[in-house]
Image (tube, rainbow, N blue to C red; front, top):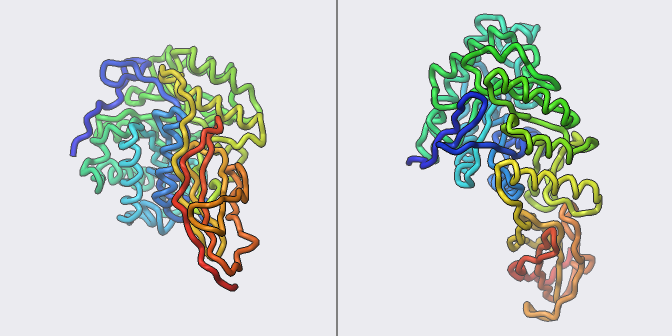
Length: 429
């Protein structure tokens, strides 16, 4: 299989897709390769992966940044559970996410490690494998550096089981990032790792980032293409200042994470759109519909569920601003929100479960005790999409057959078609 699109390349401080300038916006979806929001650590379901990527597309994204497609060590379901050990099934899950991103025309930014000791492992996982208690030895201990380089090589040389394309030859990947928020990385280490990546994979761009401020001493590293700065909260003045310094040094600038509540979001997004020095932005962070109703929740204060149901008008407005920015950043007109697809539901002893659909703000459920043709009674009318509990029919211990049907409503109240009518037979608990 071949992928008929060019790699994203750099000319000075600008990105190009073929001969066309390339600017981007989109979400962080950090859990695409390994999830922590499932009552433990596990691989995300295919539904959640696809729902999140479809939502990103509806929000105008052309690039997604995802930690766990590369930074995945130390857990039995990680890419590398132990030093020198690799998990084929974990790689197949990453293969799937990359393939689904390609199917939707999305590009990916993939970090190789995390600065922090989160569930997907990080610097201290590598130092711990060598029985070192100081995680800063990640940057100086020769054994650890070689371990990290070996890990990178396995990822770069991985051949996707769905596409047959090695990661190092896949243009779906826009850039490799040395790591997430490597705040203390010495310039010598950055140069060594960048040079090493390019020695194996000269197709892809390489990024390096820091939390809260520009890592300015890295601007002189020839093999580094992109400088990434994270802002909590989003700050337009800092964005403009940092972008100017990066571009003057001949590198590409991106805001790889930003906190969108409790800030002047409109000013920040406008500054990014209007300033050609800003090549891209990635908000933190997108979560999909859950497998059996509502949304997946992550309680860090920055979770984006699109679309907001409108219960909180400020939240709904900010999420729509993120959507508009996604289109404008890449030079496209902002389209009307989509009409949702038909939702799919199931009934188990009078309990109604359904998977939410992209673009749905609310859902209405109807039932009939006469026939599958009605007459229908609305049992809940435009229940917000973020309501996660299934609906329990108070008459579920019924003595007659009962039929149910469901439909979704978008942001503008445009309804989907009705779901398949499902019948529940009489039963006693």
